[in-house]
Length: 375
Image 1 (cartoon, helix red, strand yellow):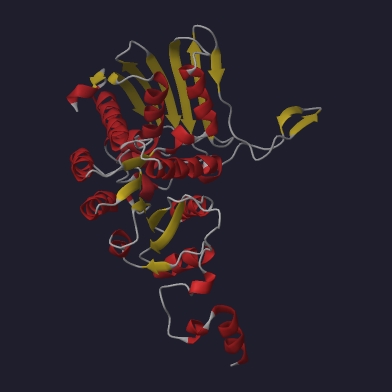
Image 2 (cartoon, rainbow, N blue to C red; image 1 turned 135 degrees about the vertical axis):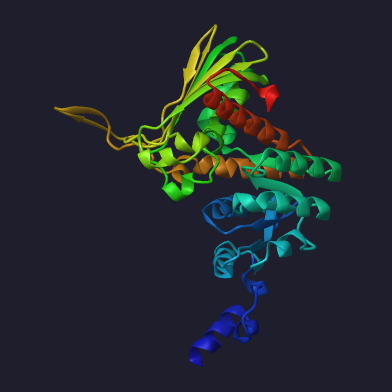
């Protein structure tokens, strides 16, 4: 009883009542006296690792406030709410979408729920930040974008590499003319280890699941629309996936993309790099060449009789490698909402990336150049 009395004094008498899905008022996120006039009220769907990354970013800006979070396992939503001082939580995503205070919804749920939740957000007049993909197939993706356009809401596709400081610097060098006219773009994307068989099966294959980020980045850097794609796929790492169909049977792929402005991009992806998470970009221009290196936990280098180089391997987990990118994409969408700017990575951007991935899969299967217009 003594412990309850102490808790009551600290949190208010509501702490002694039956369990609730709201934080006591005294423990909610305090409003700063220097807070801006426009603060976007946000709801988050999904309290998994991606949801928590975005929730952390939202908690660090005065321009937005998360007022509710949902997760099917409600204990996860409750834990996240208490960690980031979110006033309410629920097991039902509809509670987030239909919350009277929510102006924008961050969809961080499994991919199979995205299209339905986007549709509900549009019906409720709520702007949407959605983790990729917008939907699991092309018709659903097109319909979700159409519904958002008709409702007049902003839709952002979270292709986070556009917001990574390294790739962003490469983009700036192109826009500013620092590298001159672009001649060619090269990208590589290699994971530390292949995912489990269960993840690969039904995941859409290496082009949709993995290379879609590189396809989007190549379009972002080239600054033109894709016309045709030549791709090949093979299996070198996990032979068990050979029983799967189409691009799901590949763990390695090479892609060439030809753009409307005459430029080309070359991409290689592989599901295993024993030295860590390998994500690099290179742009050759008429004035200069710019390239990125991998991200390391530290800058320490080791000099020994038999070795000279980085003391540790690159990051081996995408959440560590792209932590800053996830934060920046959330802040970029908040800025678009507060200042009524276009979505920094639109639904159409997500659609084109999906079309490119489908075209690459078709090219690999038919062993020919595939036109994006054929999809």
